[in-house]
Image 1 (cartoon, rainbow, N blue to C red):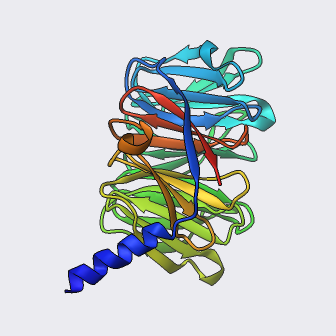
Image 2 (spheres, helix red, strand yellow):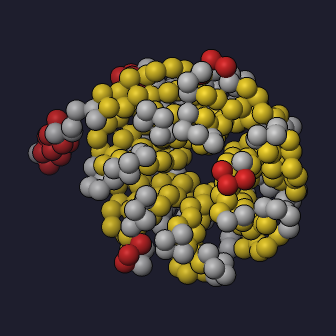
Length: 319
């Protein structure tokens, strides 16, 4: 009887979801291996992609058939970060280090080897590059000189994801030892350590209003941490069937999406954290394998998704 009421409540909740129209605009198939990462470009219609083939491509949503290769590196790329202030793309080449490319001049500015670990995430703020490595280290480097400012060794497990909040003066790092660690931007000191998930933390992201830190894990849970209450846990949601690989907020900050190894994208309300829509292969001709990255652009509100199936999908979401 309890199971009956549980499923009845689930059906009722589904029927109460607001009407959201999702249309698949296009599928891009320019990569020859898994697509692991997407990154914003200099303007709203531009974005970068890369993955297992080592190709870094630049795309224009107004001329989507004519994507062009920026550079090709010898090994896979999990992380890209575009720094608009200097028109520089930072590329994380696994097992080798980072490369800086001046996009306007189409010229490599420099590179530095950071040991032999995979690079899982890169963020740049105020000419400082933050790099999360598979050996558990976070390297902070000067973008102009590529000299090391600091190295944080917090764990023997991978530093998977980095999120920066200037408002809070913090950067958060999700690790494969199940912890999220919060550091001060001013001196890189440890502010708080949270045993956040049962297994690896794959993604962390501050909400646009900086009130929340949202985390997704290999345990398929989505967790909401209240930054105004010392990162107190506010919500814990069983969000997917398998690992949550990434999440991104809409340009207006009202919604966010998660993507998963279960091949689905889910759309959430950023204020109530309620599920609004499921985008998958059966209902929307979605991806057939793990979805690794999502990017919600400011260009006509188009959502991008990258997958192990070697493709990038473009979605038009209307509320």
